Structures are given as C-alpha cells and as structure tokens.
Image (tube, rainbow over all chains, first blue to last red):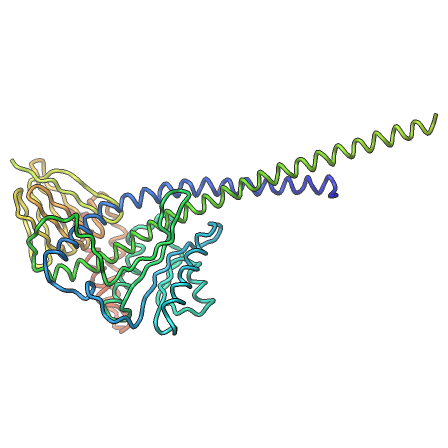
Length: 284
Length: 132
C-alpha cells in the first residue's frame, strides 16, 4: 500500500491538473460562443450569395467551368483540423475520414492532393507522404475573411487552372455543443444547387457569363470560409467537451484517492493505538 | 421622397442596414446610380467607394469586390469587405499602399503583379474614402 505521503502527493497533483483543465474548459466555452456568433454573422452573406448564384444558374443557360463536371484526373481535398490536440476525437475523426476517402477513391498519389488547414493535418500529410498543395497553420480562433482569403482564392484558382478537377472539403460540422459530425462536401464543380428559394428575375449587367465569372469564384471562397467558421465552432466545442470530461475524471480520481488516504490514515492510527495498548498491557 | 433600404453584408457580418434615397457605385463597366423603383439587377462591383445619399447628407463606404443586387425597394451589397470611413485604419492602408507600390516598382520577376495591383487599388480606395 502506498504511503500516506505518496497518496497526498497524487491528490495534490491531480487537483492542480483539474484546475488547469477546468480553466481550459471555460476558455473554450467562451471561444465557442464567439465562434458560434461568427458563424451566425456569416449566414446572411452566404444565403444571399446562394440565392443570387442559384437564380442565375437556374434562369440562364450561361455556362461556366465551375458548373460543369469534367473528367476527374486529380482531386483536391481541403482538410480542416485544429492546430493543437486536447480536443478529443476532433482531429482524429477528420484525418481518419481523409485517409479512408483517399484509400477508397485513389490508387496512386498522382490522383489527389491535400490542402491542409491546421497543424494536425499538415503533420499528418508530412508524416505519411501525402501530397500537399497548400498548407496553413496558425489561424486565429476567430478568423476573419481576410485571413482565409488567400488560401481560398488560391485553391479556387487551382481548379480554374485545371490543376485539380474536383474539390472536396472535409470538416467537422457543428451540430451542438456536444455533437460534431464529420462532413464531406464537394465544393467544385458546383452541383445540386438548391434553386427552390430563388424566385426573382434579374437584369444582368454586363451579362450573365461575366457575372458568373466574377460570382462563382467568390461563391466557392465563401463556401470555404463558411466551412472554416463551422469547423472552428466545432473545434472549441470539442475541446470544451474533452476538457469537461477530463475535469470530471480528475474529480473521480481525487474522490477515490481521498478515500484511500483516509483509510490509510485510519489504519495508521488504529495500529498506533494497538501498539500503545499492547505496550501498556505488557508492563502490567 | 421615396427611399430604398440598403444593406451591406460581408462574410464577417452585416456592416450597415438603413434607408437612403439614392445609391451610386462603380460597377465593373461604369458608374451606376440606383433610385427607388429600379428594376431587379445584379452587377459586379469594382474596388471603389459606394456613395449612399439621403436628405441629411451623404455617406461613403470603401467596398472591396463583391456585387450589387437591386430590387425595387431594396439594395443589397455583398462585398468581401466593406468599411465606413471611421473604421478604416489609415496607417495600415498607407503602409499597404507603399508596400504595393514598392513591389510594382521592383523589377524582379517572381512578383505577382496582379495581386500587387489589386492590393494597391484596395489601399488607395480606403485612403480615398477615409480622407474625403
């Protein structure tokens, strides 16, 4: 049985650990709230964008490379992960999904490339020699559109230049604070546009084709940004949940240890009394 | 006087929503002036200042990219960024302008001229709006 001092030490260190995880939980909770607000602030923009693009796509037969499916020689995957761990299965889920998708769809590494967002995805690709076209780490917790603009437009440019023929994004969709679902979406070419909500007929200035040429890249960029905001909210939620369960585990551990400690203390006292009584009776 | 509702939306959230009498802006192929009752229209905007007019005066916004959607009683501007004069960081815009100018002047080949030019136009537009 561990000595009293050893148990005491363990209780102390677990208490300290609990303080840390508790603090991290609260930090993540506040970040999650902000991330959720950011995601909400983005909704009007994306809805309007979607509406206009859909109405143009529906009412005209103007064509644009981004609306046409072409033979897929190379697929680009955008994987959004966090920069650090301690977020439960958040990163692992994304990377597992990425690996499975690649294994199922591709035979050689010429057929795909990864745009890695977040240190975990970057490290994963480096370690496994997955071809990586772009990478970005150190995104702020509340990314503004300007911070992601470059990588988004470069990625969309890769599609326009014919470097990739299909663009898929893998990220954690934020359902609620305790539930995040790995989502795989095809961004480009744009398919299955929801055209039900758009009823208005527009004049186009200068012309439909030119508008599409301007609008579609922006639309694709906004989709990437939307996914990133969603992923950030998920990340903070996942981290909050992970830290909460860590704090709960620490509490359990402390309870168990305190019980052992008290038992050991009691045993030591009992033993002392027995010894004294034994000593006293030996003198009689 | 008839008015129209103008809302300016960016990916970082709505910037402005109010009623005005006239919107004038610079589309890719020329100036556009929108009055209430305009036919539905969609036009891409260039990096420029959007002027919003009403009786009490005129307001300006620095718009970067995006497009304009017009309906008879409502104008929506979707831009990648939109700033009111007070929100513009003049020092930063000035620095960005100088950086872009330096880049354009240097003779090296590896510089992305298109990007530098866009950056220059954005910075100049911001300064223009902030100072007027």
